[in-house]
Length: 596
Image 1: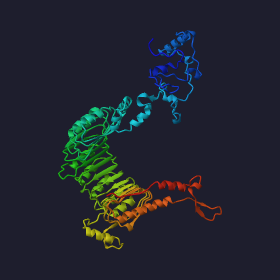
Image 2: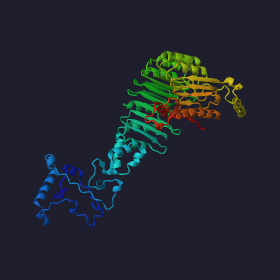
Image 3: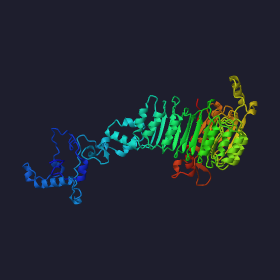
Image 4: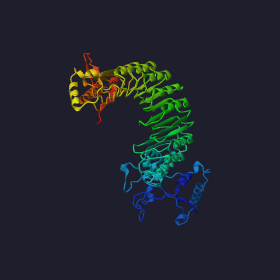
């Protein structure tokens, strides 16, 4: 008779369980005493278990009794596929064996004896993964980087199958391509992920259109592509190759690429593209955008003098072909007032963020054109422009209710009065960057002059203070303030309850005695390249605020009502509201960051 047959005297468990379990290798040790089975006679015989095995007269003669044959036939029929006809009453479950202490007992470890034997295996445990639940192994392996997954696949067959399923189920992949890696390595990894939706590559070697072809072939449903380059890597992709890739990927919505110095020109035509970031652009002969759903664009041009890109024509084509633009960032030394007028001529009523960086020819007249065309701006970045305090006044008059981020770094014509006016007239402001605006008129000094200046600055009545400026800001919503490189700043007074980040790097002439910070939520202060006395003053003010919070104890009046005394926290069963507030505030520790 073929197939596995249970012993006639053994009660038959559920037939489905027998089929599911199949044939398993038995244990080499006795399940009663723990000694090896070979040449072994267990001292605990079957009669000690209290379980009687029915044996017929024919059994004693070496045959099989009728009752045993009937039991055997019924069990075999049930295991052969007669599962639907079996009733719940006909299924007999095994009688539990009395628990006995094994020769080598592990009871003190807390491991059950049934878990140590191979006869009983939990259905949720995977034999190929070392009896680890499949969902646990999945959660562990899914947190590994790609290199870790490749190593885990070599452990065993079960881990290799799990990693294969992980690769197939992956929707996002971040991969670093080292300098000695080949394109075939990237292709072999991408072929494991047919359902990939978002791909981010960190290239440390040169690459060309072969990489785009590999991505297009391996990721048919790609929606987001990011390619970042290191300093030594060169991007040799041309504009025509990139345009062909964008046109072929029908589901592509986001494209971000660095090192685009060899594009030369491109024609982007896509009905799904919404985000486009290109950096390192240089001498573009043509730029055509046919992306009606484009909402965010960032064009970062190189700062080389021989750049021949016509920024005005680029901005004009961009504004006319993408009416749904909301965020625009353009960084180029070729930005001018004419480019701003070309942008304002487009009907971009949904524009919320405008960043025109490094345009020295952008003046207050450009600010007036921006204010009249885009009244709903939430972020305005005119860093590196030539605007003055008058331009700040126009910004405050047009955007008092919408503007929350204002960046005016590297604007030499802005004074502390304009910064104070912006902080007072923009109540929703949360971020302000005024780095390198308040600068010293004579930054180049010899070492002897710097030593003499440091000695003179120790006295409050120094004659050099007339060239410096003071800054007073009081704002209820400001969270980040950057004053890096403001060497012409002499005094600073801040009253900002929500301020958590302050940048004072290279504020060399800020007097320690003229610094006052009333910012209880301050978390970090950057003070690199500052005077040692200023750093000590910052640490003193910050630590004083923390100690004032930590030493706050709840009070309780005495029974006679005479006075209030400090009560330990352990005295109150329920902490007071003041104690809860103090504990929340004590968790915020401000750090003074000084880097060499």
